[in-house]
Structures are given as structure tokens and as C-alpha cells.
Image (cartoon, rainbow, N blue to C red; front, side, top):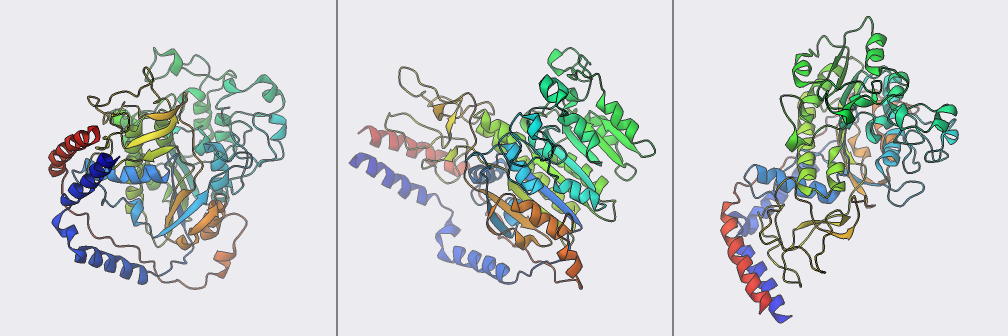
Length: 536
């Protein structure tokens, strides 16, 4: 025990020696705090009516993911990472949202999306319906439909759009336009015959019928075409072929519905790049049969990035003088976490942060409310005692009681639970920084579950101060609607008589310079020292 305490003491002592000289000076921290404090004191509320709402949703982007992504973003720029300022970090108004559903302590993306988009909490696996509807029971759906802020915005004359890195029929984007007792009814092929007889329709068909959506970008081609239809990108892949049993080609139907308008359907980067936002009224871009590829595996010659799709959507929507509502989802953060692949999840979160930066660049904060949040979290931990600047995807220099190293990122449950003869894998010669590495998990499950802690909500722009405190997740939809004067509560626009002062947002001290190279040798030496001490 004493040897381990000594190891910990030396760990802390030596790591402090690696701090940059300027950070050893108390005045560095005092002056930084004074600048931040003054920026907060100088801040003025922006009480304008929000012409536009730009809503970014990081699916599964809990606070641990947010923190780890910040470090990764800096380290990808050859910085230590901890002091990096994410675009999300510059949002001056921050709150927390409680994510439970009506029937479960820990919710899924369907129930949470219904809360923050429709303003009503509901049951697990259901979208766009109240809690009076039951999962998978079509008969309980009728009469219990609830509409989303996307529809409220469209009814108010605004242009609307969805951008996602998943299939456009997935839980988050689907909730903006569909009502379904099951989030899994992507096409009629996934629906039980009883549900069809009871009058329920699939999610893909509702995308055309329920709301006139100006921009639809993501994946999901196979749910739009008749069974057996060859995919244009993967014609030999049977799993990529059309799935619909009803014989409908929803892509063709969508194009026919837009006669008299400039409506473009594209499925690859070349055609997407050729779309002129200035002359395009409607855009449907479906880049994969199912979900899009992870950012680190994306072929830029075939599929655009979330930054590119966000920019195209905004440029098309912002032509409307009445403004727009745009939902942008970084949906594959969640899917990477389910697979226990922390590297992949963090790269997806970093990509979303760049998309947020592009959104701020293209819009005016005086008239655009920008909100960033997660729907739920994952059992994802950041632990151990890694040195400052050590790779966020690396291992703790202080080994465990079984005399084996462990990664600083791991999961409470998931596919990474591996024991051989009752022992954990020996990671000494394992590269844990690769995109395919599956993090260790305490409990064996096929897929990592969600977790139930509150998620962060960040906002800037008109009425952004409404997004403070600890709130129920369904509050978010009502606060956005109030700020933009859409939906039922129009008090804000009725009371608006004069232009208020503009909001002054945080100004941050620039990222401290300093790379990782100097830490590498020290970390290696200290790791060796820790091993010796622990084994004493």
C-alpha cells in the first residue's frame, strides 16, 4: 500500500514538472480569470425574435464525450488538448436537461427526440406520439400524435431542413416529421402486417406526406425504393437494395411532388457539389443505403462531410425572408459508443464541432438562435491519472492491482468486456489509439447501453438565456419556439416593440501553445518508474 501511495505521489510531483512555465506563474491564471469575468460582466441579453433556429444534436454526446472530444480536437492540432477551446465552449448560456422517459429512467433517442423536438415526454422507442401510445402497438398511436418544432416553423412560413449522419428515417430526424409507435418502422418492410391493417404507415412515407421539408440530407436510400432495386453505388450488394414491399419509389414520388420548383435529388459528392443553393428550392441528398460512413472512414470523393452538408442546407434555407429551422444531427457518435469504439465516437464529435463553427460563420447571431445539446449519454468514463498532454486514447501510467495497464477511456458495459482465464487482456503491446480499438468494459453486453445522467444544453443568439438551469428535456422545444415566435406561444413577438441590445458572448484566452512531444519521453520514464514502484 505504501509503495502505491509513493507511486501516486511521484506521479503527481513529476507531472507537475511538465507544466508549461507560464502556467506555474499564478498571474497566468489570475489574468485569464479576469478576462473571462469581465466578458461575463459585459454580456447583454439578446431579446430579439429569432428569425432562424439552428439546432445541433450530438446523439450520445454526454459530458464525458464532450470533454474527451475537446482534448482530441486539440491533440489533432498537435496541442496538449486540455486547454483547447471547442466552438461549443464559446456558447455563453449553458444548462442541463433531464433525459428520462415516461416509462424508463434511461431513455433512447426516440423518446428523447420527442421531448426536445415535440415538447412532450413519451415512452421508449416511440416517436412523435405522447406517452398514451405504446411501443409497437399501432392502435394506441391514433389520436396521440404530437407535432414538432420543425412543423411549427413550417406552419409559420419558415423553410425547414434536416441534416444527419445517420439514415434520414432514424429516430432523431424522423421525430421531426413522423408519428410512429415504433422507431424501427423505417419502411413498410419493417412493419408487422397487423400494424398496416390498423392504419399505421412507415416512417419513410411520412417524410413525404406529413410536412413539406425543404432540405433532407443523410442516408437511407434503401427504405425509399421497391424491394430488390439495385443501389446506384453498390449494385452487387444485396443488403443495400431497396426494401419496400409496397412497390413505391419514394424518391420518384418526391420529385413529382415538386413540379414547378427546382428540386434536386443527389446521392454522391459530385452531384451534391453541383447543387447551386441560390437556384435550388428543394434538396434531397441520400448518400448511403443506410447510415453514412464514420467520418474517419468517409470517402470524400463520394460523400460530403457534415460541415459541407450543413453549409449547403443553410445556404438553401436562408433565402427565405421569414427565416428557417434546421436540425443537424451528429448521429454516429452514439453508434460508435454502442460498439465500444471511443476513437470513432470522439472523431464524430469533433466533426460536429466543426459543423457548428460553419453554422455560426454563415449566420448572424443577432437573428439566429443556435442551440447545441445531446439527447442522452453513455456509460463512458474518463479515468486514471494520465499526464497532461497524454493521448486521450492512451493508457493510464499507473497500473491496476492486477499489474496490468488500462486505458483512460472505457465503458461500464459493452462488447469490450474480455477475460482470459479470469484475467484482463495485457495492453502493454496494444495500440489503443486506432480507430477500430474496442475499449474495455466492466460488464459484457453485445452493445453498450445508454446512461441516464443529465446532458448539457448550450445556446447563443436571441433569447439564449432561456436555456439555463436544470430543466426537463421537453422544455427545450418550448423555449426554442418562444424565441422564434412559432407554435402556440406567440407572446414574445407580440411584445416586441424595439430592437434590444446585442448579446456579447464569451471571449476566451487563446489556446496556449505547446505540443505533445515533450510529454512523450517524460510519460515513458514515469510509466517505467510507476511499474517498478507498484511491483515493489
